[in-house]
Image 1 (cartoon, rainbow, N blue to C red):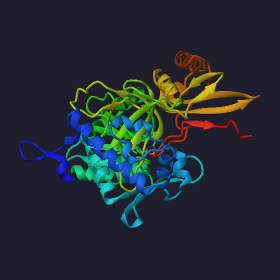
Image 2 (image 1 turned 120 degrees about the vertical axis):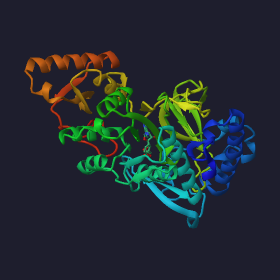
Image 3 (image 1 turned 90 degrees about the horizontal axis):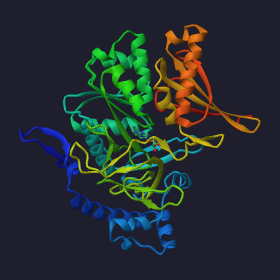
Image 4 (image 1 turned 90 degrees about the vertical axis):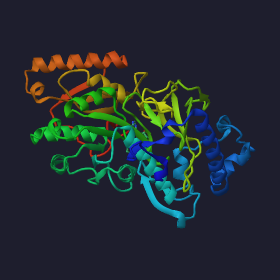
Length: 445
Ligand code: DLL
């Protein structure tokens, strides 16, 4: 796998991988070759894929160009649930060296599998991720993504090792120890969910440990949506550069797409993961630049190839070249999923809009929760947001003024007034992984 990585002119290890910079024609030629192979593999070994293609009278030979992909059937999350646990595997278990699983919110988890080759591809795309975020051999990475069935911990771990960085496999949680290690081990980079990092910032302040004076210079965050406003909060509070990385278990885990120094969209590692954007209602493919649902085809996965997987994540492909020089395309940061839309009084609202509005008002903390209830048949939304101790201990009049400012900021973004509760610091539960932003009690009683 090291052959994918360049040596720089001085003969040293240079953590930039050639596929990021391939000329378009060469990249597309590679994509088509890999696409034909992966579809043939899935057709041969995965019953669900073969059945669906047969129903449409399609065989792998119908794939003559990359555009022909749009005739192939989609795969969705329920396909993984319906074939639980191993029904989509294209390799015999004797070739599978790793299983991960994603719990989701209800029922059985989905199970994903990797061959040795898949693990190597995964490590290589994570190496490219860390390189794009400016990491090198010599960096000390605190890996606070959870280790276990979740793909975050081990996915980041192998990539950072392949890069040659020093990995601290601390996993999520035990926040006081995280802060001690960060300081005592001279940690230069840290990865975790953005919501957990906001908790680290808060706890460090309580312990009078100033992140800004530590060697930490880069934060690599993903696994949940976060806004540009949240990035600004994090970068200022910790004096670091904060990068967004994206991925999902069904495709590989983290390592599907990553920001670069430009912090302007995430480069998708499209030599391994072919992106399409579709209209979520009609399923039609949309041209680059238009917003819709991201659909991904794995081009090199062996154990569990996934063809046209509907991610439910809403974004668009940015067709313009990036300032960093990478030729692989970018996607806009994932602000929302097609299934996290909340409808209140006929208005469509996304949690990320609320976050963006809350963080524009001074005196709020980046800890909030959206409560959904049903009163007399009508859906109601109440936002609970923590405010700084100064605001909270101030006179009622000051709190009221703050509430009005916040209500107006939210109304400007979503167009309606919703309930708002200012709460004292630490009243909202902190997460060690993905934050639970929406509490839906509409069907509770
Ligand atoms: O969250 C993999 C991952 C680990 C990505 C560490 C990045 C870093 P799942 O648990 O299967 O996998 O969840 C995947 O999380 O479909 C998105 O809805 C959401 N998601 C992941 N990264 C981002 C991001 C991992 N940067 C689901 N921005 C995806 C917004 C994200 N949403």
